[in-house]
Length: 433
Image 1 (cartoon, rainbow, N blue to C red):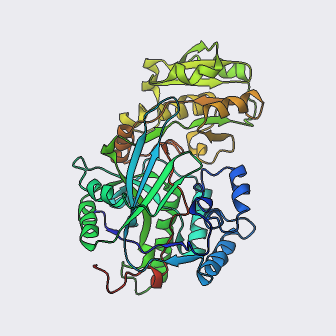
Image 2: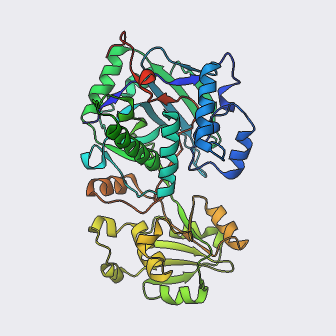
Image 3: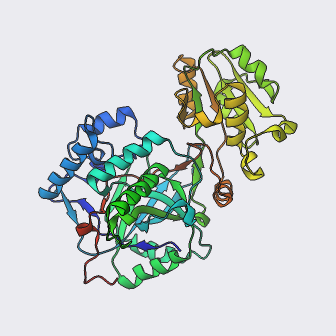
């Protein structure tokens, strides 16, 4: 049972702040160094709460949040609501416009073993620790994570479609995506959202680090509170929910970039690869991503002066010793991390999550540029993951390697923030709940 609640978010006060499109920012794990530096120049941008500047970053965010509340830069909604959030976007090379429809609400922070919220990939410990510290100091959910539910009847879409006709915000973000947000205050409709979601299992699409941070924070607070009841603000998490059946979920590939690996030698790598893969040189490195498109267990390898398409020899898959069920073993990403990164490059699976030699890059042109310029030793180019594969992994109880999926477009931060400080979290007595 997925228990959700309406929210009373803090939002920018339009009477004292500039237009909302100057206040939004990318999520902490996708914002680039260049973007951060530019956004920091705006003293009111939401980046100061989501990715605060060091030193003492979390303390600075907490102090700033207090000042913004005191100075009425942020105002808290009086009424509980469901926030509707639509993202209109196109993909490179296609004229088709997609619209990803969803809504934002609080959800109870379920432990993984409850099997209500399911994860599909591992996290990186340092990133989790950073999120915990920020949550502890601010008691604020700055950005919603992204959760998926399945409803082939599209029960809630009619309410969202009606609300979006009267938008609160309409902007174009850093991705070139048109973001539109609206609000539902009708108590009966909000109750309908809560009832529909009660029977749902949620797949965590994006925000594993932030959600895991919420879980750890919840347990810390539970241990420190002898009067814990279960309805305190720390028991809840902010999430953006979208329907897996809508046909507007896009998962882009995330490539692996290898840098600084001791003893790196291209000739030796190719020699080791021959044991596991059929290797074909690529005449045009710029089309390497197209050569592997749609082909299972096929990868592109970029070196500074050469490029190759490699495809796993079918008989080799059975030699994998990682203790995974077949649906996990057959994933492209598992094959890549086992046969290329562990067996060929020599980075053991248990060390890969925190390895300083492995970086992640969603952009094929960026991978190519980094390798050609000598900023990286090699790049491993992979295909996108399907939503059906994500579902299968989640229900298996196992996880994919870290940074396996990139759900596009990303949710944008800055439209709203929700507090889990008890006095600000509680719904007013005149609310319908």
